Image (tube, rainbow, N blue to C red; front, side, top):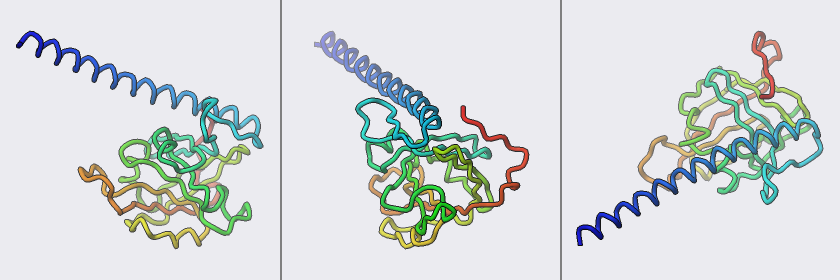
Length: 201
């Protein structure tokens, strides 16, 4: 009996290890494919480039936050499936690009607080980052607000700007929290990023 139990636990352990390794490999491959799709999208600004052939999404922009050493490509459509792979643009909100592109509503990018947007717990007012659009235009943003809101709040989208949203609190043991961390940002002057080179990698 003990022999069978030991064998069963060994098989279970190997199965769990194999599943974990598979999930890590899948996540790594997804990031490679998303980055490749972004490079392709930059060469054709009017194309909706999918990271893999059966994806129901496409790349829309790339977020670069030097002070947190983060470069993140953004997918279209903030569904649970897309958020598992990358920060995602909430399409019913305003388009990326800001009011300079004729948008009267705020643009929203969401991400998970335990993966891609975990660094937002350290975001501070005054920090600067860039957003590169598929057209190749690199926009400079400055954080103007960091606050905790209820998930039902969406009035902020009536004000043009870029908003980053993730679940709150961070490292919570409880799932399904109805609180969100909202990072608000507005376009800043081009020379505010002097000395910082923004390139596609």
